[in-house]
Image 1: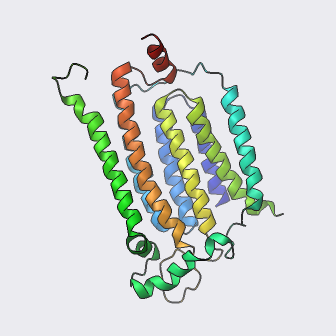
Image 2 (image 1 turned 90 degrees about the vertical axis):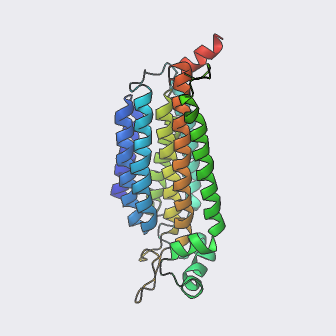
Length: 176
Length: 117
C-alpha cells in the first residue's frame, strides 16, 4: 500500500509541475484510477469502484470537455511562487506535527473503530438483512444523508443547466 | 515511536499539500480544479485509513469471517465522492462561462480585465 501511495504522491507532484492542461487532466485520471486501487487495499471496495467510475471516468471527461471549449495551453504564471510555497510548507509541517497523536494504521482499538461502526456490523444483518454493510448503512441507517446527497447533485445539475443552457438563447445580447 | 505506522499519514499530507499548492499558486482555473480534486482525494484517504482494521476484510458479511473494516468511513466517503463530482461539474460550467465572458481562464488576465473596467 505504501508503494502505491508513493506512486500517488509522485503523480501529484508531477501534475504540480505541468503547464499543459490536457496532460494534467489525463494524469489526474490516472491518479484517480490508482487511488481506486489503494481504496481496495484499505478494504473500501464500494468506494473504489465509485472512484474508478466517477473520479477516473466522469470527472476526466468533464475537464476534457472544459478544456475543449476553452484553451488548452496555460501561460506560465507571473505570480511569485514563494508565498504559496511557504504557506503550503507551514501548513504541511503543522499537519505532520498533528499526526503524532493519530492511531496506528490498522489499529482495531482506535477510537474511530469503536462505537457506531461496530454496531452497524453487528446489527445490520438482523435489522436490514443486507450482507453488504456499506449498502445497509447508506440506504437504511443513513438514508437521510443519501437524500441530502441527491439534493446536492440536483442543485449542481440545475446550476450547470442555468449556466450553460442560457448560452444557446440568441435574443439576450449579454450572452455570447 | 514506529516510523512506518505514521508513514501513510505523511503521504496523505504530501498529497493534500500538493493539491493545496495547485489551488493557490496556479493561475489557470482548470489546474485549480484538478488541485481541488487531489486535495479532496487526500481527505478520502485519511478517512479510509482510519477505518481500516488490521487483518480485516471489506465489510460484506459472510460466514467464516470475523474481522471486518469499519463500514462508516466508506459510507461517508461514497457520499463525498458524489458531491465532489457535482462540484467539479459546476466548476467546469463556471469555467466555460468565464471563458465566454473574458476570453481567458487565467486568473491574472481576468483580474487585469476587471481592473481596467
